[in-house]
Each structure stands twice: as C-alpha cells, then as structure tokens.
Length: 123
Image (cartoon, rainbow, N blue to C red; front, side, top):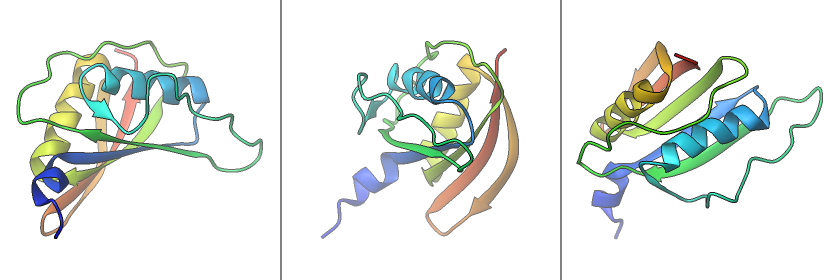
C-alpha cells in the first residue's frame, strides 16, 4: 500500500539547460527550508557540452509556511519544473518567490497533482 500522505507532500523539481552552479543555488535555497533526497554536499554533476542537461531533486513539503529561503544569486535565468500535490507545489512556488523573481510559464493540472513551469531570476 502506498503512503498517500507522503505523496501529497513530495515535490519534484527539475532544472534544465543551465549551469551546475545555478542548479546548486536553486537546490540549496530549497534545502534551506525543505528536506531533500539530496544532501547539501551532493552538488549537480558537470553538464556535457552540446547535450541537454536536467538536474532533479525531490523535496518533502510540510503543511507549515517554511518562511523565506536563503540562497545565492543566479548567473542567468533558470527554468524550473515543479511537480507534486496541489498544496505542496503552491508552497514551493511561494517559497521560491522569497528568494527569486518567479514568472509562471505554464501549468498542467491533473486529478491529484499539478505541474508548474517557472522561470527564476535574481530579484
């Protein structure tokens, strides 16, 4: 039997086409508020020149407000796909807005999950 409570709070974040330093900055900011499947020392691997790169991490999002995220600046805008339960995705989106300028690029709504496509930039 699946743990449906955990499924409601688990959010997957995928970052594409950016530097490993920018991916590390976004994941580091999220780790400042949410537990993750990646330890703080687990930095994104080097991208392969000429090939698309996707960095992913999962975060456990509690029902409580995480407060502002801490984090480093970005060298360029970052595209993020955030997927999970409706409430958990909304919490992550709001939290990202405390550290970065966030523009919603699109969303896909499912029966119990949603996916947001976001562009993150320095504030």
